[in-house]
Image 1 (cartoon, rainbow, N blue to C red):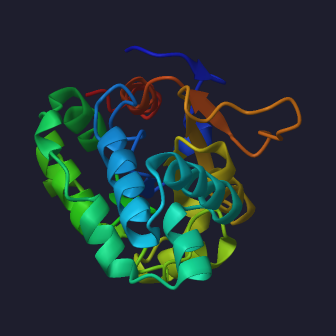
Image 2: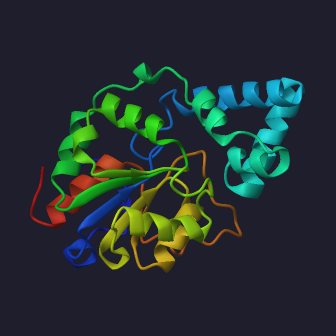
Length: 235
């Protein structure tokens, strides 16, 4: 097993879980893989073309909307009335071949009992391509994407309720994995066990409350392996 998990996983913490909910980008693969950077570049291109502004101005708007509305897409919808599907198709038209099969991740996921589903602020087609490249597509039972949530992104609480209903997730018997600690707050409020997958893109500030994060880890595979051991079902 690898990675630092805080606190240590006890069987009692997770024995009741029968549904495992995963974010996609920076959660099922590392921030060091050039996937989201490609999307970031495409967003800048789209905004610059749409509004007729410089790349520098588009970058400013992209990050401003992301901070204010949870996703750049939501900000563009609210302030500029863009076609959301056109945006999603454009920004996710990237080279997914930078991802490769991850047999250790597959084994760790398979070692946990119950269903596995994805909840992402991205598109379903992007999620499907990512998990196919990682070699874990057949492990997941469903994908809840930004369209399914009426284009309202995490951490707004409303789409969490929709996700629970559509994917048939019982929150009191579910765990959610996220690289954004803010996106775990609604999950914790619903009674889900929360696992924060830390990386440098989402560092809490001095005033940020992360008490809703039940676990924190630097390595999702290491956490899953530790959980399987705690359940007596090591991969």
